[in-house]
Length: 119
Image 1 (cartoon, rainbow, N blue to C red):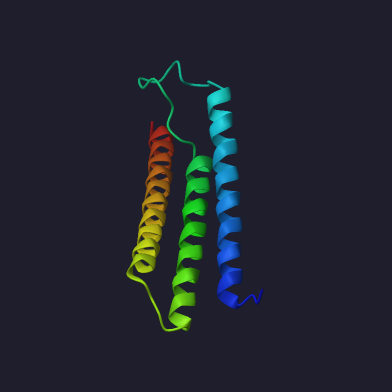
Image 2: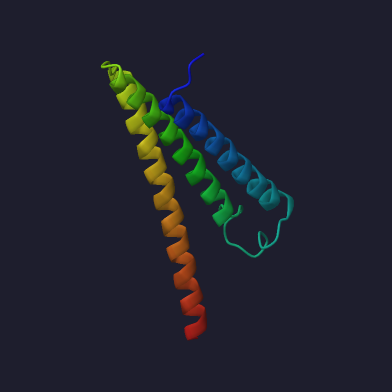
């Protein structure tokens, strides 16, 4: 089997996906195992931690990387199926959504720490 650059990038994307999934699973397991502040919150379940959101962002980043490598391989040979473009676009969209959630959570955390210091 002859490996080219796009195959190596796709494999790297799959490895990044595995790392993100592992990070997200470890953080979710910790959140479920240690109840912590769940009794004091108005909501019955706690929100995802920053680690879980980082894991999801890394996972979807790896998915986008592998899909873009797949499209690059098709472009290299002069054929690009519409399904491959749609899959790559969907992966980039999911990655953007997960980065947006992470950014919003960090912003809310920063604002709550600033409000706590102001009082």
